[in-house]
Image (tube, rainbow, N blue to C red; front, side, top):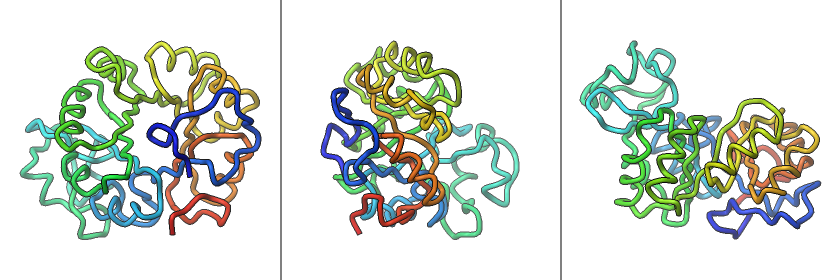
Amino acid sequence: MTDGANGLGTDADAETDPTDPTDVTLIGHRGCAGRHPENTVAAVERAAPHVDAVEVDVRRCASGELVVVHDAKLDRLTDASGRVADADWEELRDLTVLDSAEPIPRLEGVFDAAPDDLLVNVELKQPGIASDALDAARRAATDVLFSSFHAEALAALRDRDPTTDRALLVADGPPERAVDAATDLGCVAVHPPIDLATEPGFVETAHGAGLAVNAWTAADREDAERLLAAGVDGIIADRWDLSDGLPSRS
């Protein structure tokens, strides 16, 4: 497990292939969605002893609150239908996630549930919520890494507070394009999918620019081993028990 700033820093001069499993950052995807109902307070609480960080997804509901939910629509996660953006918090708070009894939380609820030593990776699902998410993190005094596919969300954070830790999520494209975009935004990390992170030269290019590489989303041991061999700094995973080779506090 890493000891760098937010557990996500990288030394551009360090060896990157393969990664020592004890140095990789383990980030629980949606609070380790393979173990507990995704993006819930219960998932965060139960994953916390086993991971370095938890990743959660945030978007705005109709009444203005920031809610922790991945999908733009409610159909997959709940018995309700329609868009999250069209539902008031009073409606959302009574819904439960998947087949559990766990409700959809507000962002503040996740921050309250996170132990003081747990990094929370907040993925901004919409570009216009960055400032409010930053305010919530400040009120909670929570250690946060903000990530997003939306460059404008990361730019808003950079412009308001350059000291925020930011990571650019990318889905495809050559390493140079992802690294240049992340660098222009003042990011500390880039978050590619597994297939992109394991392409020859991706990790080396990112490290050369001083960026950490945290790859998504490892579902099994094979995924984890591929990422370790590629030299990534962090593994965003649905489970904390992918293999004995992954870092664990348990």
